[in-house]
Structures are given as C-alpha cells and as structure tokens.
Amino acid sequence: DADVTQTPRNRITKTGKRIMLECSQTKGHDRMYWYRQDPGLGLQLIYYSFDVKDINKGEISDGYSVSRQAQAKFSLSLESAIPNQTALYFCATSQTPGTGVLDTGELFFGEGSRLTVL
Amino acid sequence: SQQGEEDPQALSIQEGENATMNCSYKTSINNLQWYRQNSGRGLVHLILIRSNEREKHSGRLRVTLDTSKKSSSLLITASRAADTASYFCARRAGGFKTIFGAGTRLFVKA
Image (cartoon, rainbow over all chains, first blue to last red):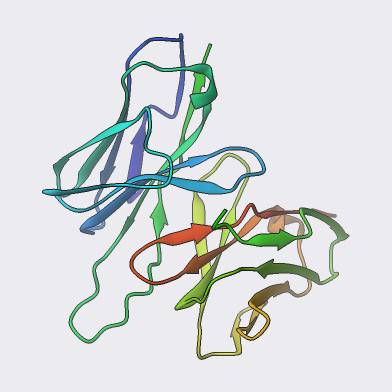
C-alpha cells in the first residue's frame, strides 16, 4: 500500500460544484502539504499544515480551503469549482526533524488527483 | 516568480548516452533537491545537495551545485529507457518552503 494515498485519483466536475480531495498517510509525518501542478509551471503550494492545529496558506490559496482532520489526514476543498482549477493536485508529507537534526525538507508525494472542471 | 529556471525544458537522447539537466535560482538556499516524476505519477525524491556541498553522487546520478552562480546540474550517466520522466529541481530556502522549478522532460530512446 502507498504511504501517501489520495482520493479520488480522477474527477470530472462542473463549474460551481463543491469538490473535496482527500489525503491520508501512514508515514507518521506531522507536516502535510497540498500542491497544484499545471503543465509547464511546476508545482505551486496551495496550503500546508505542520500539525493538526496549524494551517497556513501557500502561494495560491484563493479558491481553496483545507481541513486537517487528524495527523494522518489532510483534505483540500474547492467550494465552487471553476475551469481554471483544472489541474493535477498532489498531497505531500514531511517530518519535522528531531533536535539537532537538519531539516532537509524532503517531501513524500501521493500519486496525484487529476481534477477536470467543465 | 520564486520558481527556478530549468534548462532544457525537454531533452531527447539515445539509450546509453548521458543526460544533463540544469537548474538556476535567484535567492540563497539551504539545500537543493532533485525529484523525478513519471508521467501522471507522484514525484519521487532522488538526491539532495546542501549549500556547503559542491558535488554529490548516487548511483548513476551526479549533482553539482555552484552557489556563486546560483545553479545546479543533474547528470544521469548511461541513460536507460526507464529514465524517461520529468525531473524537477526544488530549492529549500529559509523557513520551511520547498520551491519547485518547471521541470525538464527527458525522453530516452531505446
């Protein structure tokens, strides 16, 4: 089984619909992230969370919201989807390093959720 | 944009040849990482080089870092068809953020 699992893997929806993408992880990491990937633009950070009570906006948070239901679960919502939110969405995790250990920032990614908004 | 620039955007080579991809960035870094993405799949971490390192090896991968030029390169030696993928550099700057470049698409012809 994958360490970082995203559902659904593919979703087609219509403009104005509410969509939730879910992410769960078994790596035991405390940090979780949502990224968006558009062709030719690399990955852009939408939201990140360092623990259950910590939620932060990334570079492109407008039109998105998130919920950290548990350490292992981090969901991304589009309250009213629009066509330019059509993209590949990735959840990622990382671990806060221990005392005296350098924080490398290495990320572990899920397989992605492809969202198409018509 | 905070994203780095990767060069080339796409690269097509024959199996057995070496593939070199370059990454430039604008601000200081703590480390630079390279990730691989097979088509439509998640990214996988390949190798990390710290700001005080100049070269690092992992199997057929060699990464160099020139902080004075704010650039890094990834060399894949003796490429294989299975190396066909997109490769991304990712900068770790101050704080927690990992910032990705737009990637290089590598196609290795058998």
